[in-house]
Length: 326
Image (cartoon, rainbow, N blue to C red; front, side, top):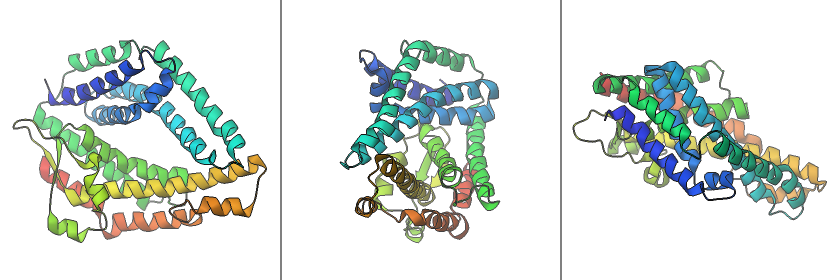
């Protein structure tokens, strides 16, 4: 079996297993959400994004959109679920948070149940169709596939740096800037984890010492930074671990800043909706924030500037990939 097909098959099997767990559940949408289907869908999206650039653009883009539809629904559920769980802990905000967040979560879960059942996800029709397409596709020889996979990763890095440099990805915009910047560098990380061993990390203790800010114990131990072993004598794309850890570190830090900003916006919204506006409640919320919500954008800009201009992480990772693919 071609290495490219194996990458997809692994994720198809994982998604099938989750769908099997939801089969006998009355609330299938909630079961699908709670069994971490979103992680698998991200990897399937990532692979479709890669192969629409190097294979059948129309077909892989079509499948990317199918997987993204499910993943977007799970994202909306996660957003409202997490905000409800947080704000319902405040007795003053419980009623408003139920109306604003819990009702939306329940509605999205019900809609997802209908999608899974009516669009052929639950009975296996959709994934069987995708598997048949993969089996009939004409894949590139392994060496060409490796080179093409690496170039897609390089192009993703080039685009995010270019868009940041040109001001398109502004840290002073929470959704279109910080969130979008994080989303773009996260795709590079997901491409690697979804590659099924094609991407490997090489330790360089001197470099890890130089970039120690990024190489924290939490980042190094993250399961997202442990690549599966490559099979047999297959070629690999080798990235020095410190650079890859830096990607992971910034993804995490920007998530914290982005979430702080979104949480603060939603806290003000739910507090106003509850009619319980008071300074003590605001102080209680602010004590839960890891950083000052009013300085999210400034802090994000410092981190993004250091990542790109001072430490040149995208350039380091891109160089390692190019060294591997020649």
